[in-house]
Every structure is written in structure tokens, then in C-alpha cells.
Amino acid sequence: MDEKRKSMLKSLPKIDEIIGLLEKQGIYEKASREIVLEVCRSVVQKMRDDILTAPDKKLPAVTTDSAGAARYVLNQINNLYAYRLKRLVNATGVILHTNLGRAPLCHEALERILEVGRGYSNLEFNLERGERGLRYDHVSRLLCALTGAEDALIVNNNAAAVLLVLNTLAQHKEAIVSRGELIEIGGEFRIPDVMTKSNSILREVGTTNRTRLSDYEKAISPDTGVILKVHTSNYRIVGFTEEAELTRLVALGKQHGIPVFDDLGSGCLVNLSDHGLQHEPTVREVLATDVDVVSFSGDKLLGGPQAGIIVGKKDIVQKIKKNPLNRALRIDKFTLAALEATLMHYLTPEKAASSLRALKALTEGQGEVRKRARKLMNKLNKANIPHLTYEIREDVAAAGGGSLPTQDIPTVVLAVRHKKLSANRMEAMLRKTPVPVIVRVNENEILIDLRTVSEDEFGFIEDGLRQISDQ
View (tube, rainbow, N blue to C red):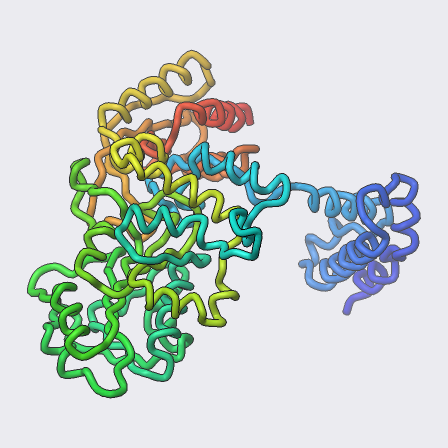
């Protein structure tokens, strides 16, 4: 080690010196002594690491004074008060964007969360009988009415639902599934891995593109616990394909006394083909096959909070409820409150498409999206933000969230160019505004997709564009 670095290491500030400076600034009004001490130590360690690793030409810029260290500690502690989970504007055109929180909640769901969260609630208390109740009862009646199920259970997401059902019905037994349905979705969620964690044994049948009913039938043995069908919600196999119909699998299961489980994935409660989209099997249609149990997500096509919903035959669902693993996967009062409010919209399904934002974004006509694009462009033109030009054009949006993978949804975008900044620079700067605006980049322009932007977010877009243009 050279003498310069040795000298700088010796001159590193003492922890007590830094704390003394911070105490004069009232640091303990912001954080406890333990937190301040821990941050001071980490700051001094960072200064030491910088000295040891900085190239010679950058070494003079490394600070070693107590005042500089105190300022850095204060900044670190102030940052602890900055919310990291933020509201943002999704202008990408991906409606159920997993990285951006999937489905926005409806107004009623937000109100119910506030109402239930501000005090005590009857989460597990039966008001009629004055005794302990089940948290699932608050939404099971709605789910049964909307889907035709005999009983329902809600856990924290659909992966948890699949894990719980398989563990209940096929622990240490075989779960028969088609090779073409051994899916992987975002976050490295793989059906075979979930089956392993559920302690069920994977028994794959058929081929990637063709699985017949006879393939399932040949695989049935005394070791069979369940027949599993997985909806390939995030991809499609086309061409020379074949799959066994669910109705025939149900009949096969009844013949051999084996339950049939359909992992529907991105559950849907309305007929999307009525809105010009490709048909996605609804939960009611699937249950009409007399399948034993179905699972699906609450925050995808349903348009509610993150949840895994299990519906089906009462005896099967009751058995799943009694699984000790269920307690580790249960949902809280806020999810229940939001889900109950969301499900109520489906009591009049023709209204759900206009009152649930995710469903509206999926089904809204392109003409309405174009009107919003014109309104935004007019607003931005009136704002007279320097260096920016705008153009409205047609494009395609996507459902996202592993839903409707082959469906291009016609949309309208506002293309924005800056005379001095590249599109990549604009995109990066918009991500760092107080209310981040997430956009697409197309060559030297950014695209604001109005299918996923509401009018009450126009102000955030204007503020973001003005901020980056002022820099």
C-alpha cells in the first residue's frame, strides 16, 4: 500500500467525532442512538473501502473529514424516511404489468381497506352467533354466487393455491399432468418445482404438443393422487397440437375415484369475447364441467388484490381448509376487504368492465383511448413545454400478467420527442421524477400508451415532462 493511502486511512474520522457533530443538529429527533451509531460505522467503513479501492487518479476526491461524514450520515438517515414503494404512472400499455403492481384497485376496494384498517373488525368473529368465525366466510358467499362453486378458500396468491391443493390431495402421491402444461411464469415459478415443494410426485404424460386422454388413463395407478390440468395462460402452442378436454378428464377422474384439479391461473369472471377479445374460459364455465377444484389469481383478469382463489366441491375445499399449511398462506384483512369490494362489481357483470380499471383497460374501445390521447396532447401543447414535439399514432397494447398471450389489443400512443435529449435519457429521467412515469422507448422517441393511463394522471405526465425539459 502506498503512503498516500496509509495517510488517508489514519485520517479517517472517529465515530465519536461524527456523533458529536450530529448531536448538535438534533440527530436523535430523527433516529435512535443505535441506528445513528450503526449508520456512522457503515459510513466510515465505506470511506475506508473507497480509499482502498479508488484508482490513483480518483483518490484525491475521497473525503475523510468528520463534517463530510456527518453530512453523509444525516443524508442516509433522512433517506430512511423516503417511501420506496411509490405510486407511478403506467404508460407502457401492459395492462396487468407484474412489475408495476398488476391490477389497480377500484375506489370501493380502497375505501373498504381504509374502513377496515382504521379500527377493529369482525375478521374472525361471527356477529350473529357471537363466537369465533372464519375469515373466508366474508367472500366465499360471493365467490360461490359468481362461479357456481360449492365452497371457496382464499390464500395469498395462486402459486400458494396450487401448492396447498397439491399438498392436500397428492402428498406422497402422483399428480398426473401433461408435458405441454409444465409451465414457467415470471419470477421462476415452475409447476414441477411447486409440485416438489408440495410433496407430490410429478407424473408427466404425453408430449409437449400432443397429450391425449389415453395418456392420462395409462398413467393412473394406486399411487395417483390427483389429475392436474394447467391453463397455459402465458403462452400458446399452435400447429400440430392436441389436448384432452377437461370434461373428459373429469369423467376419467370419476371413473377411478381421483379428484381433478384445474389450475386456471389468470381467472376470469366475464366473457371477454363479448368485448372483442379472444375467449378465455371463465371460472363458471370451468366449474360447469363438474371439476373438483379450480384455482386462479385475484389480481389478474379479475382486477382485484393479490390473492389465490380456490373454488370447487365442498368436501374437497373443506379438506384443503383443514391443511395446517393453510395458516401459513392465509390472507389478511386488507386483502379480504379489497377482494370483497371487487367481487361485488361482478354481481352486475355488464358494469364491471367500466368500474374495474384493469378490466376497462382490456375492453375499452380504441376510439375512447384515442380521445384520451388527444386530450393529453392538447394539455401538453397548452403547457408549452420547451423542446418537446408530440404525435398521436396507433399501436398495440398487451394484457400482461400471464394473460391473453397472443392477443394484440389495439391502442393509441402519444409519441414524444425531445430536441436535445435521447429517448433513453428521457425514459430514465421520467423514472426518477416524484411520481415516476414508466414509458416505452421507440428509437428516438418515448411512447405514452393511453390504454393504461387515466385522465387524472395527466398532471403527473405534464409535471414529469416539464421537469426533464428544465434540466
